[in-house]
Each structure stands twice: as structure tokens, then as C-alpha cells.
Image (cartoon, rainbow, N blue to C red; front, side, top):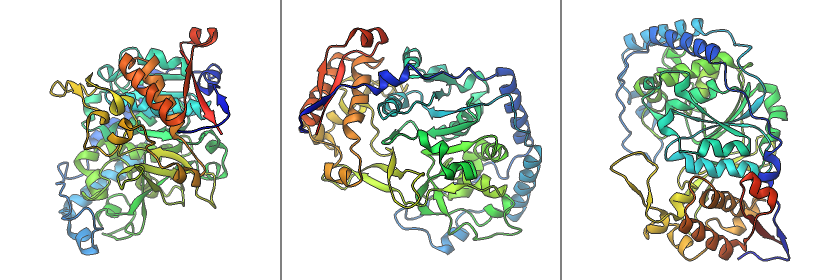
Length: 470
């Protein structure tokens, strides 16, 4: 348990949120018209084939050999030429930047369904660490909404948007395709996009004022591995006049977080939308060939490369965080892009163990998945075989404190503070879940819970969460 003489009850979440101006909704007419012009160009210029066979490599633990990469995906030269011609036509048809549609800067997160509770953790953490940027939370349609949540997050300087208000979402068959449209449809000109399972561990607001962003207008983060795309991919997207290994030594991107200036890189964003529009049928397989990372993540750098636009790739390799005392990964710890010289962590993309209070401590809770075959959510607390089960039942930290201190951070107490908000004073509130959460926080971190003051009650924030500080 943490110990120390000081007890901090300051609530950045309540204090900062009151001063954040919510963005207006997008201009439906302009946004719909812009998307329809893109969709028409996409529909008229399909890559070939539209049923490109996805075959996984024999081993996903060993990086593919050059011979494997060259021969893995079967694609005829005729189809590759047809795809290249379609690509040329799409680039020619990309519309001009719509000056009236976007302004300002803010954070965009894609949530909905089972992802909303984990999104609540990352969104709460943004305010706990001092971010004052407005946030748009995008979801696919009304079925993705958690009843009451969108009204609730307004007090945190956040607003919900539905993709279905601006497009026919039936065109998007895979969840990976939703990310680009949430970025494209967001009202912000400059955006920091975060996946629903991304938990910031350092205030990211300064990124937009950094020289790395101002110089290029794009910041991307690295993934673990080099490129495994088809040699015909550079030919299809106009980077080469023939099949080429030119991408083989490129570092792939990890798109759990990205920063983008739409005005400076509008056409590259639209081109990435084309790759995602036909992602499941063609481009995701061309880019990864079924090795690790099939999905949207590398459509962004490929679009930038295709149009010869500069971007900044964070030079620091990501680090994997592990469950304390085990070799079980939790997620990817990505670096602060402002610091070129030294690795300083900023984002925990918790792609393995999702930090949702329902996934952690709920017992017998109804599922948020929307699947009638999955009516009850079984939490880590209920799964003895899961690596963090004993940490939850025996009240231990998930992260190793010494390892965190060596990195200059200790995000776990604040992450739990954000999850306590969901368990005790949100649409996910449940009496036993709240009690279980608070008991764990008290025993592990020395949290205390004090009755809310008048202002906190009026704002709906409930009891104060006080943290012992050394």
C-alpha cells in the first residue's frame, strides 16, 4: 500500500472540465456532400480483386523471410495494373479541402458498445492528468450508444457523435473501417486520435505546439515490426513502376494514437479513407499479407508516402508493459513525441488487457457486447486462470511500481480513480461493483473516499477521491 503524510483530494476532472468549450456539431450538409463526393469516387474506382484471399503465414512469431513476402499473396499483374489505374483516378478525384467544415483542435476517440466502458477510463484519465482539449467521442450508430452516457460526458467537456448521422454505415463491414471516418468527420482541423483502449499517462495537449507537429502536421507512432506488405503494393499506390521491396525496411505504424492536421494533409487523409473503404476486401491484406497488424494502421503512412507528403514518426521504440510479476503483456507504452532525445512515456495503448472497470471487477454484470449469446460479462475477477485475477483478489498493483518509477510515471492510482468514477457515479454504476472498486483502491493505494461538497454534488461528481501522496 502507498503511504505518506499528505492526502490530495484535488479533482482535476471537476476543476478543468467547467472551462472547456464544446465544439458545435458538423455542418450536416457540407459534411454529407464531402463524404458523398469521396464515396462516389471510391465506388467508381475499385481495386482488383475485391476478394483478395487472406492467408496467414505459417508462423506469426517469426518475421517472414523475403521469399515468403514475395510469394505469399497471389495477385495477377492484370489485377495489379487495374488497381493502379483505379488509384490514379481516385487521387485525381480527391476534393479540395472544405474550409468551412473544420476548425480548432481537439481529441477524437472511437467508442461504442463494449468499447465504451474502456473508453470511459481513458477519457477520465485525460481530465485527471490535466488535458483541457475538447473531445468528440464517435460511435457507429444509435445501437452503439450506452443509454445516458452521452449526456453524462458533457460535464467533462466531451460530446458524442454518430457516424450514421452523416453516412450509410452499412458500407463499413469491419470495425477497423470506422476509425478513418471518425477522424474525417470530426469538427476539428487538428486532431489527436485515440483508440478506446488508449489510456494517456501524461498530458498530451502540448503536442500541438511542438516543433515536430508544426514542421510536418502529422505525428505517427511505431509498431513492433517492419513492413510485410506485398511487393506489388508500391506499384498499386504509385510509389514504383514495378513490384518492389522498397517498403520492406520501413517501420510499420501503430495507430492507437495519431496526430493529424487535416488542412495540411487533407488529400492524404482522403486517400487513407479509400484504402480503408476497401480495406477488408483488398488493402489490409496487401499491406500486411496476413502477418501481424492486419487492419487500418498502416493505411495512414502508405497514403502519405503515395502523395509524397512528409510526416514525423516518433523515433523511440515502443515498450511493452507487463502484469507485475509475470510475462503477460498489458499493452504498448508509447513515447512523448515532443522529446526527441529521450524516451518519456505518454500513452498506454492497452491492447491486451483493457482497462474497463466492468472487465476488471464486475460480478454477474450484463454484457455490453450486444450479442444475445453473451448475456453476462465474465470479469477478470471471476477468472482464476487470468494473470491479473490474483492481483485483484489479493489487492496488488497491476504494474510494478519500481518499473513505473524508473520511467518517471505512476499512472495506476489515477487510472483506478477514473475507473471508480465509472463504477460509482456513471451509467455503469452498480453498488457491489463500486464497493469492490473502492475496497481495492483503499488497500492498494491508500485512497480515501469523502462525502462530496455542495459544488461537486451539483456538478454530479459525487464523493471526493483522495490519494495519499509521499
